[in-house]
Image 1 (cartoon, rainbow, N blue to C red):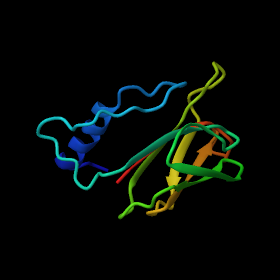
Image 2 (cartoon, rainbow, N blue to C red):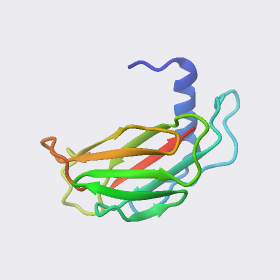
Image 3 (tube, rainbow, N blue to C red):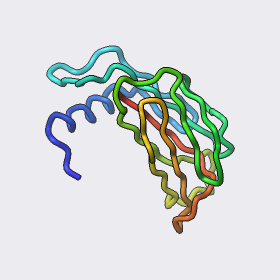
Length: 135
């Protein structure tokens, strides 16, 4: 899918505003957008790191329920006015990660979304992940 120039600018702006997202850190955001970049309707950003057992490693403004193997329901503490854009990525805290594990976001809504984590052959598997919801 190809992003329009406006949304590409939004993505670049969100990335620019991220000060650090380390394996052991939390996303910290700056307080102003770059000159000339419009952040249409983005009033709330929630992000965090979730352990394979569904416990929150870092972040706030959300709860996590581990539904089954590799399936996590994220509920936002305050609902968005419209469905937010949500991205997720598997991460690791060890050197054993092969880099082939993947994650995906399913059923985003104004109050929640589901993150699915998979092993390197596509099976649902418990994996740590990071996510960010912006809306």
